[in-house]
Image (cartoon, rainbow, N blue to C red):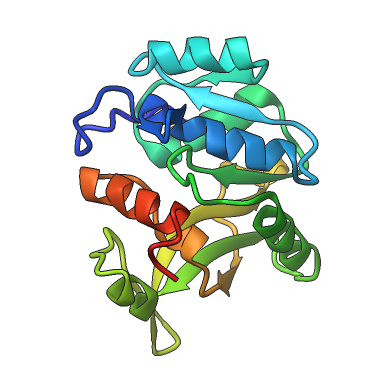
Amino acid sequence: MAGGRGSRLQMGEKPLVKLFGRPLIDYVALALEDSSVERIFAATTDNVPGTREWCRERGLEVVETGGYGYVADMIEAVKNARVKDPVMIIMADLPLITSDLIDDIIDAYDERPEPALSTHTPLDLHSRLDRRPDSLFNYRGRLIVPAGINVLDGSDIEREQEDFHLILERIELAVNVNVADDLRLCERIMQGDLL
């Protein structure tokens, strides 16, 4: 998912914001390419013409969405891509993600009977990173934060799907880039300044 305005970051098109000289979306694309994922689609909108062009130059399949919001664009992207199998939805602002972690999430999905899987991190991980998350859920008495990676049944994308909540205490899932402080936190983590 690479079509949002990125208005809180205020650095232009968020997927193209540089982290150590590379666009945020490049980290995610590379992790997906090195994983067991079979096809990669970049969902873009008219909000991000530069991102759309970058994706095409990079050889990614681009699907256009209307820019009506995350859920509406996600549904439109899956329909436009004609995906009927399980589909992983991942945000372009997760530069710490790795191919191994993507494969771990896919393996967890394959082991579950539910048609969908959502990934989360525990709130205390965010507290240790001195981050204030945008969303928070109480799941069975535990405070968790959505991580921005979901697996859904593409053939039933327009319906709400029962999902398994995969809760992982992984720093790679805890930091998505929404504001400049998040970008600096990623830099510190990648330089080994935080464990």
